[in-house]
Amino acid sequence: MDVRKEIETAVTQPASDIAPLSGGCIGQVYRVRLADGQTVVVKADDGRHPKLEIEGRMLVYLKENSRLPVPTVRHSAPRLLIMEFLPGQSRFSAKAQEHAAELLADLHNVTAPAYGLEWDTLIGGLPQLNTPMVSWLDFFRERRLMFMGQMALEAGRLPASLMARLETFCGHLDEWLMEPARPSLIHGDVWTTNVLAAEDRITGFVDPAIYYADPEIELAFTTLFGTFGQPFFRRYEEIRPLRPGFFDTRRDIYNLYPLLVHVRLFGGSYVSSVESTLRRLGF
Image (cartoon, rainbow, N blue to C red; front, side):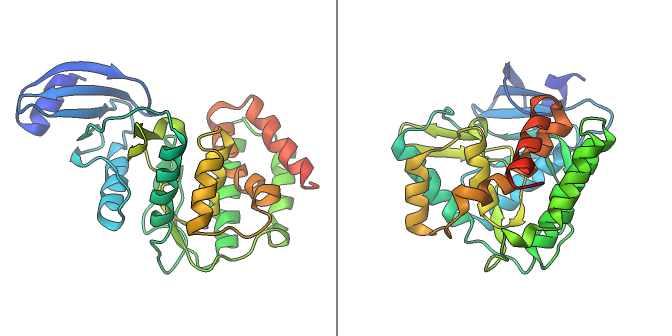
């Protein structure tokens, strides 16, 4: 794939200073200077089944339906995604964490009639099934835990015995979880490298995996790899208080989904993490 040629065809102007960037689970990522002086981020995928247009569609959805700061999409196609370059780094001061809490609390106020989305999205390059359901517990059980667990099983990454334990656990979700008041739009993949900050302000969220959910699943994921800490949660709860029990139990239950994503992608220690969570919950 001639990346320069593809870019210049898409934006109808010369491109220069094409430099690779880190990040992204799909294809290659570049920082590119265009002839009109603008700097853009380019993702290119010359694999067998490119799907970069799904990421572009998610960014456009967030831009049109929320106030979350995301890059403007300039070109979106399966093999090539071109978007606005956002300044910032993935290091967050206490004030930046508070700003992130305000932005995500605002995002979580965006609602819909059902959980999921009218179209399927991606997480870490994997399919994310979003066929809408009116029950969050049913959606979380079927579209998240069982769906991703089955993918990991079929890939040979999740042992059949552990899949059986997961299925048994899924039959008891109502012992810990309740139906939320309403579905909330979530970014879906808020971890350190997908958030940018400059000084004390968040400048952007990238690489989304959107759908409508219980917002606690978003908050849980921020703790899995230590993206945010006390300043974030203190400010978030000032805006949207959490029911008791989130940090004791529900956080671990909701983090089973990203753990299963990582099992499907990488296997290894993530299998042990799933096993220990189920064991802690009595399964």
